[in-house]
Image (cartoon, rainbow, N blue to C red; front, side, top):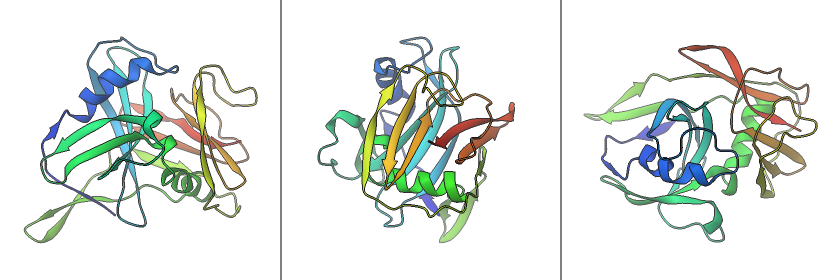
Length: 217
């Protein structure tokens, strides 16, 4: 479960992305335009230290973009190239936001969702000592491949602006590896068939046909 806080963020996540997204090779949309939230889902860090949230957003009237983020209470060593920015959180203090594909906590959780249909974390607030569950904004469906879910070692691949030669979708993907499994994170998700090797699809209000979010290669 993911504990959320009713907090003020400076800058907001969307303001942070408005400055960061246009510099990505896979970016599509209006540079300088406001970034709007379409939907989101979270994974749960087993250690309870790192926030892991994937945002589906648009820049202006551009296509939906998938941005997995991690939030940490201290800088992640060796990950400066994946830093999205720093947020002042009114409850938790300073938080370092990273492109999750460059954070070692993310690929094993993505692998569990892609290969074993592990699903998304339930989100809740603490209200007067009681849990108040927040309804999910989208649905996730993973594959049940029967393959063991790897736990490491982890390395992050580079963003590809070109279609993956053997991939089911065109456009930019980010490739991450965990153990002997290679996973492609689809940055501009569209409806597509889930590969036999395993995939993660999602849908949200207004997007009834599931889009492919990630797949095993």
